[in-house]
Amino acid sequence: MKRTRRITFSVWYLLLLLWGLVILWSYLSAPPKAKITYSEFKDLLQEGRVLEVTIGEEEIEGKAVFLGPQGQKQEKGFVTVRVEDPDLVRELRAKGVKFSGRQRYTFLRGLLSWVIPLLLLLLFWGFLLRRMGKGPEFMSV
Image (cartoon, rainbow, N blue to C red; front, side, top):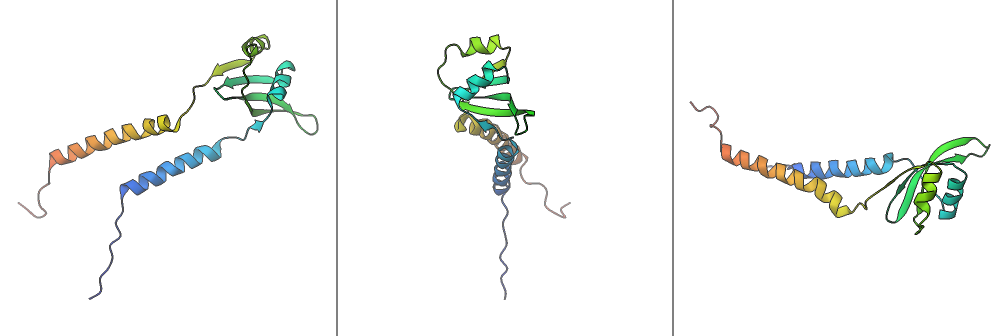
């Protein structure tokens, strides 16, 4: 007698795969940003080529107008390390640059914002399934 192995499929594997694909997609779909030094950032700011800035705890990122190889202007994202500069906000205001702050993203905060609602939903779903109990048997009258 030949035994066949039954392959079991878990919804958890599917959810894990989906979560991994979402993370991979968000990483790959982000446009590349030019890494520049803080002094280059200040030069761009003085020349009036910085369009907008987001100031984080450790880095500054934004959009600026860069000059291409043939001198053509192109809008591009940039990122630089944040240096403690008390005059930065004043200079940004003087040049009319839109700026905002950003809170630090932690892996734990991101994980909890996805996992806790999902767990609550699954617990509620399991509770409802247990309350319903077994359905009627097949072919029962």
